[in-house]
Amino acid sequence: MPLGLLMLSLLTAAAWAKTPVETALDKQDRAELAKLAEAAGARAAQSPNDAAAHYAHAVAQSALAQAA
Image 1 (cartoon, rainbow, N blue to C red):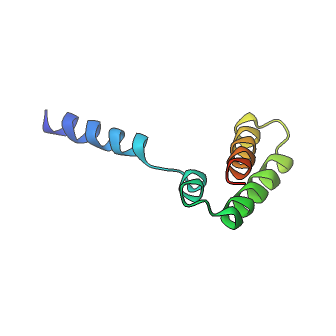
Image 2 (cartoon, rainbow, N blue to C red; image 1 turned 60 degrees about the vertical axis):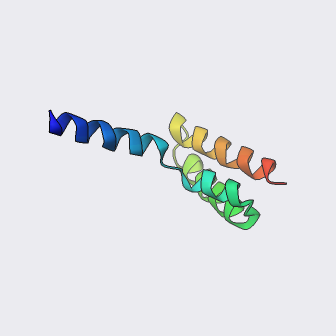
């Protein structure tokens, strides 16, 4: 049972962990958001069939727009 409780707490902590985009948006750090959006765009351009890469790029661009 203690192992199950440990796993549950680790999963909960991982779910609440913020991504770099969320952290930069919280700080309203436009330079960091622009850097993250550019990097995500480069990854999306290299993998045109990778939906996750395109989603990450869209999220980063959206965060950058929110910080404006």
